[in-house]
Amino acid sequence: MLAGRGFGKTRAGAEWVRGLAESGGAKRIALIAPTLHDARAVMVEGDSGLLAVSPPWFKPVYEPSKRTLTWPNGAVATLFGAEEPERLRGPQHDAAWCDELCAWKQAETTFDMMLFGLRLGHAPKALITTTPKPIPILKRLVTNPKTRITKGTTFDNLKNLAPGFARDIVARYRGTRLGRQELNAEILEDTPGALWTRSLIKMNRLHQLPDFARIVVAVDPPASIGEKADECGIVAAGITHEGQGIIVKDASERGLSPHSWASRAVDLYHQLQADRIVAEVNMGGAMVEAIIREVDASVAYRGVHATRAKIARAEPVAALYEQGRVSHWGAFEALEDQMCNFTGAQTAAGASPDRLDAAVWALTELMLGRKPLPNLRTF
Image 1 (cartoon, rainbow, N blue to C red):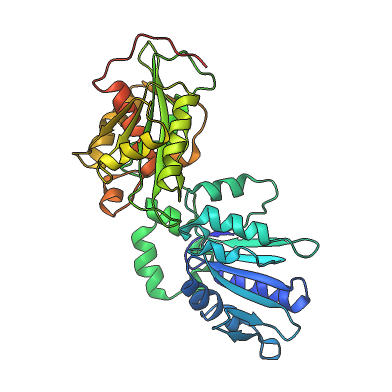
Image 2: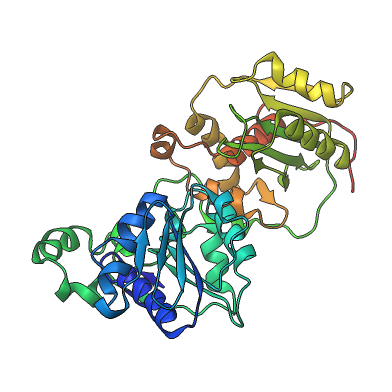
């Protein structure tokens, strides 16, 4: 259910769960929100939540300490927050209500854990209620032939909303980009002010590799480790003898230990017969090189130090794309999402587009001030 603010997504989700519980259509139900607090405050205790929509003769017993609601016929719903996807490891369900999927911080991991547990009954199913944003998981779901889509806008339910909301909020944002997303529930592909657009990347996409003069693997190491750490950006790029830059591989991942990301970078270096590993050393200093050389002391390595803001480093590389001098070999969904949502305001807010950082370092090494080597690379 892709719908705007105030459409009634929460009410629809709560009624769907109540109907399953009352009819016996589901016995074990997962209720997943961006945070555990949201699950409790919105999905259960909210004005349109499960407690509010349940009739007195069939009201569930809510036990906050256990994170459960239990109906008179034994159906049980359990609350989860997307910030703790590992809590979904183990429990089994025959239905799930996923609220505001596009606000989940670990959307991919949490959704995967939910799917692994959605294995009870004859026809397990999930309802996703969200205001849409162009995130990878949502784009995959809406193109999946097994997904049934319901759409709605704020205007469909305007008569049930406060008059002031229509007068002030809707009037202010109607027709704007933010209004198209939050009121009309449109999936907007390009972000105003972003250095890249999807049409620009798509226009220069390649499906066959040419010969390379030089290949590098760039690494943007995370400042910390663990599941909540930033991604480690690992991107390989090459340059042809004609001077065309090509993104070849995105091996970035979250939660890698230092030895793991170094091993991944070195493996990619050997796999592509690369000429150099380039790594940002602002956070790790000499330790970054030491970790890489612990995996393989023979690799050609260069540390790079960021002296300018991310946006300033990215702008010259974005210009290369505009000139048609950079292509992607195939599609890199996560990397391209970071590129097409990358703005100065985003970095000022503390965002860390690590895949993009690695791609910028790779293309800077290859195309901005460093000459390609004379040897010919094919694979």
